[in-house]
Image (tube, rainbow over all chains, first blue to last red; front, side):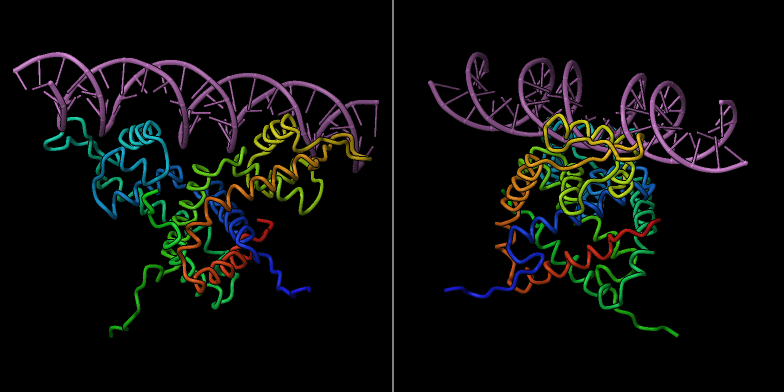
Length: 151
Length: 151
DNA sequence: GCGGTTACATAGCCTGGCTATGTATATTGG
DNA sequence: CCAATATACATAGCCAGGCTATGTAACCGC
């Protein structure tokens, strides 16, 4: 017996996942291409984390941002050269480096946010107020989705 | 006179844009790190476009995916070597190369979708049904947001 | 049919990923 | 208390994916 079933674009979980990733990827690529943030996407996220959560070790940053440890070391190198972060010793464990955001790093983060918003603003303006309101809620759901799982 | 105003995480347009981009970036990075799709994010989007919309010229693909033309040429090179696309002449304009997806390309795209869904499935499972429904809507709003503007 | 334009390819560079490995500091077991 | 092991970060070396500048072949317009 045939069971009727609504098939939307994101009807199955696989379709939902694929469509979310596809469109999110387009968004990220658009911003990377058009916003002159002066830093990479991962740099921006790492700066955001450092500002929100305070100093962190390289290994923890790498895990949180889903990159390998040497990748984070190199990222911190570049950000340190740019003056956005500084390395400081860990009191009591000489192996550990604590990475902290600097005043220049906070400014850079703010600049990046402006640049990104400038790219999206005209597109957001084309949406209906209802759609913008949805996006606000969706951003929060996305944050839940991306919450650390300790995997 | 002071006008009371609700300040949520995404209260202003800039905050909305920044938060959307931050979380979308995390999503993309997570998938890149954990899904063995065997291709890059831009390759996946290009394959998707070729399957959905049919053969396209290199220049048009580059514009649609927000990369420079030489970047798309190199991407097509790699995908052609992998057997996912083929280059074919344009009837009537000898300068143009039409890029078309192959059967192997369609299979690869399907494999990629599975791999990405496998990464997200456990996280989606942790959300409430209402939140999953919101994400479905989100994917559609995002699609509107990302619509080609001919900018 | 020559001059400009367009479409793609090539060359050369940099960043951002990765794995494998090195080095210094902690930690632990005997 | 010291040797062995484990941990934290750095270094080295690779490749993909982005960019600009430039080359080459085909088209178009006068």
